Amino acid sequence: MAMRGGSRARYVTVRTLWACALAIVLADVARFALVDRSSVGSGVLDEISHFATGLLVLGALRSPLRRPFSTGLLAASVLIDLDHVPLYLGASWLTAGAPRPYPHSLLTLVVVGVIAAASSGRVRSFSIGALVGLIAHFARDTAEPSSGVALLWPVSYHTVSIPYFIYAAAMGALLAVGIWRARSAASQSPRPGVDAVGGAHGRRGYAPATWG
Ligand SMILES: [Zn+2]
Image (cartoon, rainbow, N blue to C red; front, top):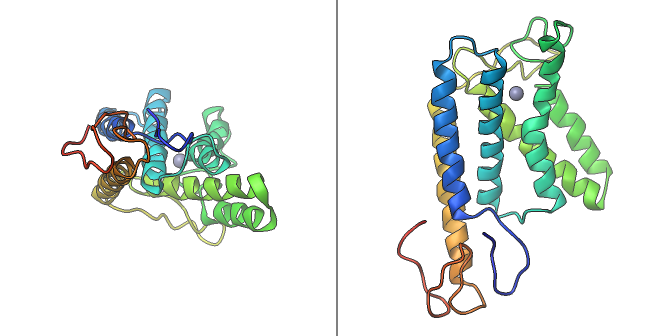
């Protein structure tokens, strides 16, 4: 549901934020239980979690949906993993020596950052969103148990990894911030009695007591 009352912009709702958190938990529990994490099924579960991670970031940033920034963020959150396709087809030239394909590195952030700096308007907004989405993606990848990311490629093949609980804590923090921001926006809605999650509260400025 979208924010109403004075703005046509649509945002990630509280309900969607909770759904994202639940999706990450369920998908990761299922994925980590799989014997073969390189399978297509594991990949699908991973992309669900990546997309949900992107939505949690959007919610915390309170970025309106259907804007270039948000589109770039969500697209990059998932599409960077297209670089796995050559390996699925049997070609290791994009992965040899690293746990993930070479575009999973800071070099990609630099390239996208240069595009953002050199562009303007919608392209710039899209690129900045893509940059944020890539950072979110790499953060999740570095937290995958028994894996990691060669962030410094081509300078080094050193694998960077962080404990999964750090990623989980970060998602919890994004969830909390996203809910808080949605509720704050709802309480400031210029339309009496209507908040960002579509609930009626009777008068302007009412602060909901419960989270939905
Ligand atoms: Zn990835």
